[in-house]
Image (cartoon, rainbow, N blue to C red):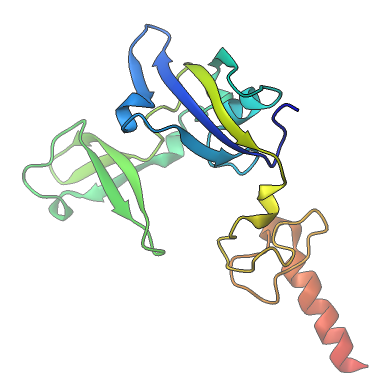
Length: 195
């Protein structure tokens, strides 16, 4: 049996740029293999796709184009912010964390410090780069662990993001807005009240 979507996988890896510089590796994170569920989106698509079909103990090297990794830089992710919001020690090239409403932080690089404004780049630092990964499968567990994963909305897989497009009993943030599933559910409820 080889790795399929939904399996829980442990891998050792080394990531480097085409010029040879190592930007990330298992060793840089204490030597412990990383564990993830294939297809969960925890890692870049090209990495997750690369482990599918591999077996325990197997090693491979893959080259990921930007589209398979962190994408191409998007000019719309550059933002100007008033300089008075930054401490005097802020420098160009520095990475800072921008707080989001949900409490998480997204990294942003200070691209330019002007007289009154600071230009921030919120593209991923590896956007636009071709990445080479050495991957070794340490272990894997069969099963559909995608179903068991906690959903961001806390709906515990009551249809969140399912192909049917069903909703999670009104859980906020659960439905895919572009599919309009929440509106469909609301419409059904309204029609039910009229009858």
